[in-house]
Length: 540
Image (cartoon, rainbow, N blue to C red):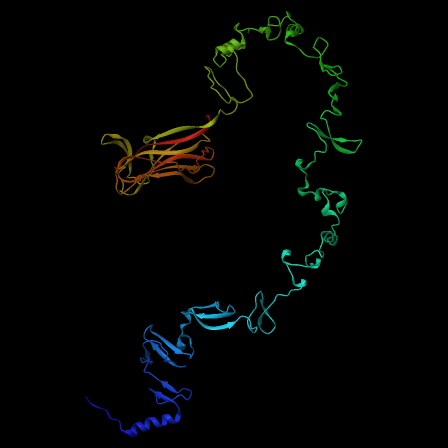
């Protein structure tokens, strides 16, 4: 082991200047006059302070150590709590609270982590507070004293807890007796009354505003001497309401006047006559309006004229006439109607349908019209609900419309399948068109276009379009009403669409035709035929 010896003069050179300056620095040749010790590290160095295994009573004010037990830094305040040791930056982990000292009851203590670190007396009164005293600030400090409050300081205090007189200005009555209190409050004798009348009301009247809910229910009414079954009636003589018998007094209603228990008929006319307690209704006769009884039925028949001959559409004599027979058949009208099971046969009507026409100025809106002759109508034959109709266009109706002269239409059998239309000749892949006219009733509505086709081509597809051409102006102005195409290569298949543009047929403005679009020189794309569904609301 080698020992390093520094010459004494070197130590003297390093220490003496430092001592003269009252400042020491390590890691730099400069010192800081405001610091006793200046430590400068190399950027990766630190200061290791003294390490204590536990915090005991060895500390002095200003001392700082690292506590090995809880791995925290502490400084010493010189106090008595925890031997003066306080955790450096430990405010976040300490708990502070206030409590009343259980022994003196006059001391408030500040606790840190459950340990008293400071205390102060509540009352600064010498000798401490006495029983029943309150904590009161005397302008300089808090002290204990008896509560002495003047009546001007009392606000919202339970009347049972005070004595003396509370003035009106502070919510009291200013009196010690009820009578004086009523006088002071301006109530007079109101509170001693068993009932309140108009004289106790300021405006000397009792109206809706003086009654709760502006109404008095029947349960609040006094019996006032009423007996069972009586009602309240107005006594004009006394000018008041009073209980009376229900039938007391006169009741006048129309021609009837009731006095006590009797009913008198005044100025009775017609079938009701007489006076007194009974109402008389007279029996009817040839001159008197009145009551017709069942025993008077024979008399009633004689008034019609029993035995006299019937006329017009009736035959026989009263009271049992019958319907007259018709001149054409000899059967009665009722029998003719019944025989037809709800209808009238023409031969049973005079004049007979077979010889005459039926004419009406109104509409025939229900039922069926059957005739072996002509049914002529001035206006349209209109359906109540739209009727579905179908028109079909065969492949034989289509004509080649392609401009390539080498293309021809071919119609024949394909492996014993039904006849379909296809192209022959031309250039494979070039478009080819076939056109066929189609007609509809004017006003019809096209709802669906359906086609049977043949498509065994994996490359090309065919299409069928419904087209209308404008007849209102010259020029080639065509518009598609519907369009549908095949897909895949399954062979025989069908295509259809219900998406129709300008579906209402207007034969005045447009002509209509079908377009079958395929390719030239293609033997596996073909058309069998087209079916178009439409609706109409009248015959054509």
